[in-house]
Length: 140
Image 1 (cartoon, rainbow, N blue to C red):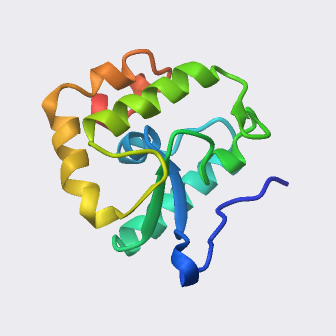
Image 2 (image 1 turned 90 degrees about the horizontal axis):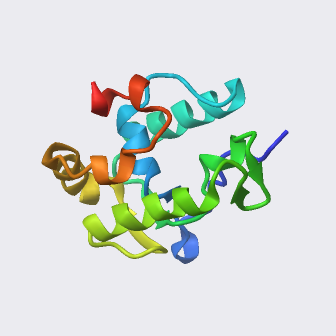
């Protein structure tokens, strides 16, 4: 079984969660669908953890994260589906949110900017080729 969320200790400045940038959008549009039951349960658990405590510390990255750890398409730290396309989505989210990969934030500190991005219409620059758009709450 793959390792699920890493839950690092706060001591020493470690984040509670590591989330790849485009997954910030996926978490807002999630309706319970996923690549596998394990992936879906892991994503739902992470979303519930963040919603229960929006002050949770998150490291935002442009590589595999705690959500990816339960994905059947993860090979080491690379996505077998299309690593470069996914990293491009991550970089675009980072750019539009004015963040850098590896930055640590509390979810409540970026939630407003995330919602503004979703409402701006620019989200299609990121999600345009996503295979989950037809079941995503953002695009309904």
